[in-house]
Image 1 (cartoon, one colour):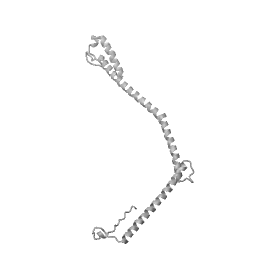
Image 2 (cartoon, one colour; image 1 turned 135 degrees about the vertical axis):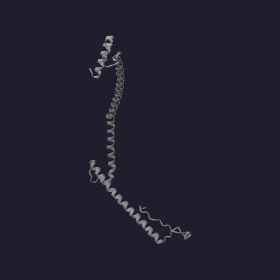
Image 3 (cartoon, one colour; image 1 turned 135 degrees about the horizontal axis):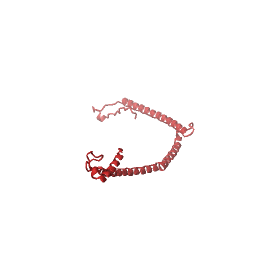
Image 4 (tube, one colour; image 1 turned 30 degrees about the horizontal axis):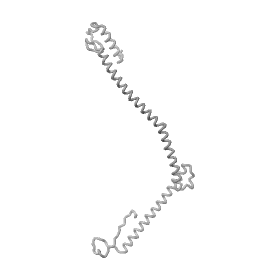
Length: 189
């Protein structure tokens, strides 16, 4: 049916001739309606034929374009040749797929494995670095305990009135060496 809906008349029978809610159509009205429906169908069929012709022309143009792209002569190239062309396209697609699989196996997979190795190594290195930082922090605490003066309770330098150096010269010498080591680590030596 066409996309323009036409009302569908129904003929009243003699049994319900007096029914007020149903319209009554004459034979001329029914013939006119049938002619209108027939004209709409004819127009729809004509449109479909035009669409089919346009579609075949478009396919023929595409077939010619594809033929030229594949090195086939464009004249005498018909839409029926698309089946053979589809076979060639499938062969090309399969070859590309095989190349992609080869690249995947020869290039991508080894790169993926190397990335995995480097990631594992980096994680190991990161955990090693964290462990070494913790050890350095513990050593620093231990050294700061040796650098702390029991007399004036300072780490960097004793106060002017400190007597530790005179009271315990050996421990004061060790404390001075540790303080020099810590100062060199800080960049103050």
